[in-house]
Amino acid sequence: MPVMDNKPMTAAVGNLRIYRLPKAIERARSAVSPEGITGYLLCAREQRIGVTGLLFCGEDQGLPDGVAISTSPVQDRAWVEEYELVITMDGVYVIAHRQQENGAFDPLESLH
Image (cartoon, rainbow, N blue to C red; front, side):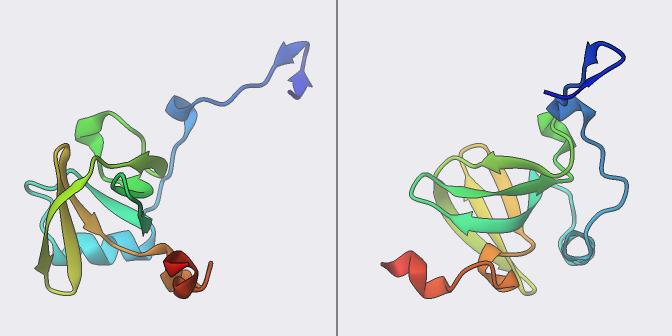
């Protein structure tokens, strides 16, 4: 851990501040009203246990923008314009961007 002035430097989730929303989140918020929405997910990826991703605009959960979360299992899905909404036991999330859309990995890898 780096030390400055004989004091350890630490980082906590509460110290994370993002002052400008990513464009994908801004577009999703303009298309899907935030009313009734738990949060917007960036780099979302389907898992057996739910959906993982970076949460934005999830103030009701007391988490800062950009924190990684995992939702509870998906119970239903809906679409508003081109955005998928995943309905889970802990809320409704808008998929603003999927991880494979940025070329991070080949989507076929998840099938093997």
